Image (cartoon, rainbow, N blue to C red; front, side, top):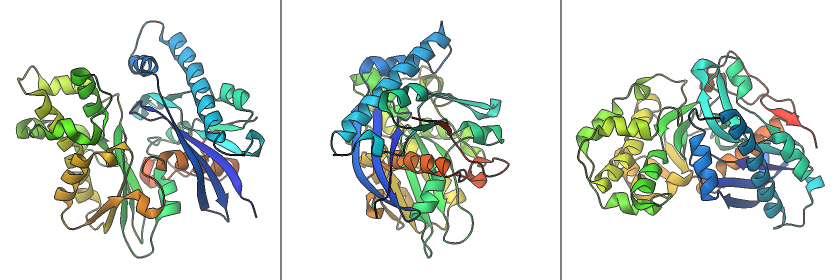
Length: 366
């Protein structure tokens, strides 16, 4: 029997582009990824989105216009994804669209992900589910991370304690205890600070394989100072983003000190590795297996540092569990869209701090 088809879209804090996954669901939680596609952001779009991370002149109009631009990019992504198949838009039950985060301030009671979902529904002729975070925040939660509920449904093991670590712009951890509660939180910066640093110095969007950072050395006093940031000592539930970990934060810690650029790059990799390791040690010390996904899983220097810190514990890529490292979040938003349409809850209060479980997402019918 044919299953339900959903498309998940994810454009994260790395601002590199849009990940899309066409997912078939059968027999409850059983899923099969049929096709995937990535559409990179033009450099101009990335620059404009970065500018919207902070107050700017005429930002309401600029945000609305960018929201429309993103909807068209999302539609192009879906068209290109479906061009790989013989599947027509009317066969797709819904699109789960995370949108592009430009502000995340749960402590003030709001989060903003843009990408005009109504326009996306018009352009594709497919029902769109979006705005997944707002209801959790309205219920007193962080609105993030949301993927632990998906991880719990798909990756839990009856005998082993697993940690799923997604390293995108921000790094987040899901802990799947074989008995007891699942929990998760943002451990701190993933790739975003290193991406910004290499863009500033080498005009590259990211440090492929950690090759540039590998030419430098860790600046231990700087690493210690950055790890002393109060965010790292906060008790979960907690979430973060560019509102905290941005170029201003980095400049504050550099404070006109004279370091080699590649040494700073190496230290930023160490910051990600150590903040993840410290969080695992503090909250998930009995973990048996650690699985990585996201762009950071391709950074061999970062992976090497994590393995050195974790010792003999198994550390592998999530593709060992049947999902490619680039697509876990896009697949998760296909799952979240399905949960919403089926009127099933998809937040975990033990992760976000919400007052209870909630059905997440706003629906824009085709």
